[in-house]
Amino acid sequence: MSQSIATAERDARLVNTRHHKVDPGEIAIGVILGRTSEFFDFFVYAIASVIVFPRLVFPYADPLTGTLWSFAIFALAFIARPLGSILFISIDRAHGRSAKLTIALLMLGTSTVALAFLPGYEQIGAASAWLLALFRIGQGIALGGTWDGLASLLAMNAPENRRGWYAMIPQLGAPIGLIVASGLFAFFVGNLSEEDFFAWGWRYPFFVAFAINVVALFARLRMVVTPEFTHLFESRELQPAPVMETWRSEGRKIVIGAFAPLASFALFHMVTVFPLSWIFLFTQEGATRFLVIEAIAAVFGLGAIILSGAVADRIGRRTLLGSSAVAIALFSGVAPKLLDGGDLGEAVFMIVGFVILGLSFGQSSGAVASSFSRHFRYTGSAMTSDLAWMFGAGFAPFVALALSSSFGLVSAGAYLLSGAICTLIALRLNKRLAEGHGQDGPSH
Image (cartoon, rainbow, N blue to C red; front, side, top):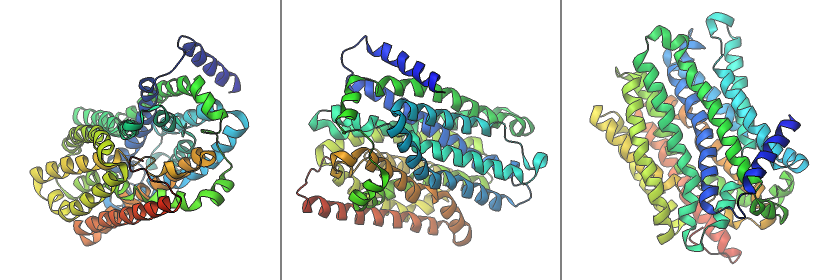
């Protein structure tokens, strides 16, 4: 393994010798490829949790219960992710960022492709669910190690008046990953017989995920061995600090930062994973049609993320996040009626939801990262991201489906509203904290 890591890093350095400086555009490519690979893995698993795993792993349960079990296992990755960050920060400090990143991405790819070989309940009984949980935990631990600081490097190389624009670039990986994942599943579900799809068709996207991870690995290594990254690492701008020391010094900022994007992350699942489960379980519509709608809506989300960069540079990132949280709160009131409103209602729900999500999610990454002191910025940002995903997204599909199946779709809207309220409170607390430390910078 160490020899392979050294070879990959050497090859990346050889590419860098052709240039004396890496500009923000090149960094952006590495960031987008890396995030796309992560989100593709994420959405492939999420879609399979709705249309594959309940039947493959939990055939003895009714469809709703089987889906809830799948969503419970889905959440394990978000619980494991902070543990992965702790583990890989230690590897980073001991063996370097290239070793950490290579091991993490290989672990992520291996855990993902292992799912392609998952035997069902009919073959190995309850062990199928245990293997599914094991591979999902492996994904979560690996995701904790994929934090590479490239988004921070991108922001540091961005012009002062375009920080919002460059902050949205890493977020583009989410809709791109969803478009590809939804498209693949829609193709196989729509063109294969039910027998062939459940025998082998659903497994193909997991193989694709491994190939994308390999491309993303070299793209990231290409960046983390640049002179600029090395300089920032050695000057402690991007050097990992001990986790406990970071918590003692920056714990309050980490907690506030984790709750600041809660509305965005809750909406993230309310327009991706949850509606697919609702349509699949409680309507007569096929999965193919809704996956296509999801992919089209994600294109609108992609455009909204790009727009968020321009808007944030005009009005400030905190202002945009606060305004988006208000929009999410308003959307939570009409979302249940739209999702239950037939073909037109579903389309409006998805497109409007993705537009609001794009504006919010586009600036949710690192919304309060600038308040971290230089020494703790790398580790603090990583821990903030992990906790934000765990609180805001990890349990969202399970909670939303459990509530809506028992109390109707209006309860899912109430859950989304609670996320918006948490975001507004966190942004207010962060503003007071920044003012108390003499920091002000609405663009951050």
